[in-house]
Amino acid sequence: MEIRVLRYFLTIVETGSVTKAAEVVRVAQPSLSRQLRGLEATLGMTLFDRGGKQMVLTAAGRRFLPLARDLVARADAAEAAVGALAAGRAMRITVAAPPTTITDVIAPFLATWGPEDPLVTVQAESPAHAYQALARGADVAISSAPPRSRFAGLPVARLPLWAYVRADHAWADRDRVTIRELAAEPLIVLTPAHGTRRILDHAVQDADASYDIVLECDTPHVAQAMAASGHGVAVVSDDPRFDLHPLLILDSTGEPLQIHLHAAWGADHYALRSIEAFAAGLSRFCVERYGPQVAARL
Image (cartoon, rainbow, N blue to C red; front, side, top):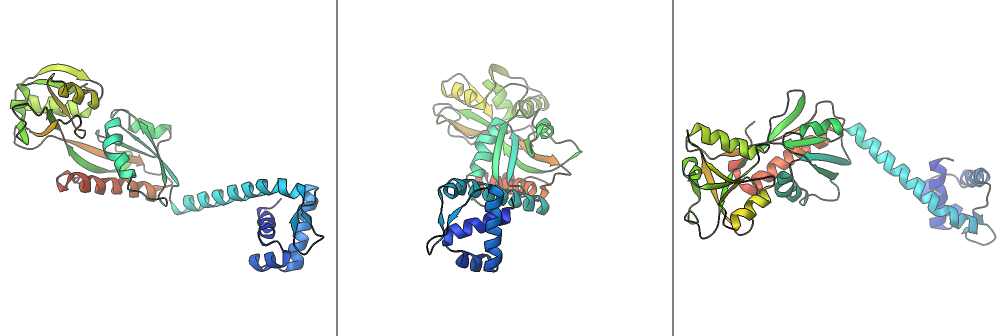
């Protein structure tokens, strides 16, 4: 049973005539009639009632119709997928990234896509394990950790770390705070597994200071919630929540603390064009969303 003949069958159903169908598919009518009879012989059933002026489906033909449509649709999808493979494009991309990056960066970026863009599946991974997901089937990984040299990739953005305080805090009328000032406050921080925490620790060490940890959190949302409830100053990189006020954190040289996002993928991936377009688009989106100061340095 050939897909080509199934397409002929569906065209006859749509036009109600072998003659009209022959014109649509550009096949001589006698040839089309022979192929239809061959299909019926293969199936062992009569598909059309040929008694009237139009080709009307028999009961068997009506039952076969959805099966034929499904087979042709599957064939069309397979042809499209093969074409995408040959062109180095992907119809579906799996992205591995930390939960904060998914919530604040990737999901808003995907909301700007259209139906012609690939479908995207996102799986949450810690920054330390995001690149390992490439070996488990992910097409591209986003992490704050630099990728290994065996991967292809590019820098995505340099996002700031924020100190979040309540509206009644003494810093609520400021837009930045030094690392020494911050270290003197009770802090709500993430666990050492997070890149944000490691950057904070290094900055405090470089400033020859120390800080008081009120609470370590696994998720930035909880850290902000605890700050909103008055337990201290939250240090995270995600967008503000709970009406908290954000302050840039300046290191000992006066530069803002930043977390660097990287994208990585297999250098021999079949869909390099699609993945490179995704990573480059994500980088442009970060600049549009947060400003030119977050542009990655190549």
